[in-house]
Each structure stands twice: as C-alpha cells, then as structure tokens.
Image (tube, rainbow, N blue to C red; front, side, top):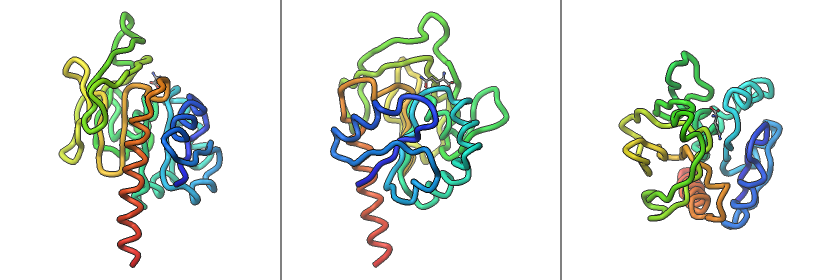
Length: 198
Ligand SMILES: NC(=O)CC[C@H](N)C(=O)O
C-alpha cells in the first residue's frame, strides 16, 4: 500500500513518519504524475490559501478531483480539511470542494489559537491527543457525512465515504491510530475496486 503526502507546503515529514509506523509505504508528492502510483493521499496542515494556490499552479486542483472520483481515499488535516471542504464560511470559493462540509477558518479565536486536549474519536480512540493550531471548525455537515469527533459541541473530525478530515494535527503526536484508521479505509476501497474489476 502506497500513500502520498501532498508536499507543496506544511507538515509533510510528520505524516510520512506516522504512515510508515502504521505500516504503509509513504512518499512526498510534488508532481501530479506521482498520483497514479498511489492508493491514497494525505493533505497536511499549513496555510490553506498557500496550499490552494500551489495546487492550482501545479495542476493538483484538477488531478485531485480525478483521484477522488476513482474513490481513492483522501485525508485532510487542518488546512487540508479546508482544502477538502465544499464550503468555507465567509468565502465564495473553495479549493477541491469534495466533502459535504462547511468549515470556518481560524475558528477558535485569539485566546485559544493553539491548544491540546484529549478527545474521543469514533471508531478510533477514546482518548486521542488532539493538537489544535489556528484550527478550522466544521460548522455544518451533509447527510452523507459521519461526525467522528466534537470539541465542546463543535465538530472537529468527520468522514464521508473515502474522505476523512480533522481540525487537529494527529501527525504532531506519536499516536498512529488515526493514520492506521485511514489505511483501513484505503484497504476497504482497494478491496471494493478489485471486486468491481472481476
Ligand atoms: N495548522 C493549520 O493547518 C492552520 C490552518 C490555517 N489557519 C488556515 O486557515 O489555512
């Protein structure tokens, strides 16, 4: 199983380390041609406007929509979640617009820009260390979206079929359970694809 981490800007090496610890081969992805060899992709945290601009410049805006249309799993953390969102509060544009979620950027306000807390994440852990850094929140989700975690009633992790996202940064901990969960998703979709091909 080969997983890419979109390496245009942001926390790339940390994701690669945890994906490897969870048992996958992981590579940094800088060119769209690399997508063909991947079973899944992580879009890391960073600055969503910067990542979005670079995605467009290098053709990832179109290529990742095709990647997703093949039901290849995508996992967006923090800025990566904003990249996946179908709607961004206060903005009339989106990046990939793949997930039926409405997000608000930098939603915790100045006092609590960055903090850590332990959260239950459905199907993954009872006590996941969630590291928030100028994090976005999910304000609304569509019918097909499963909510995986909340922080004080606000939605901070969700899944829609082959798409997974979190407001926080699992890659900044030593806990590989969320990455392992993503690899399970990749396995699930690969099995489905193989069954269709037969
Ligand atoms: N740590 C992060 O990824 C922060 C996200 C950033 N605040 C944004 O809006 O893009």
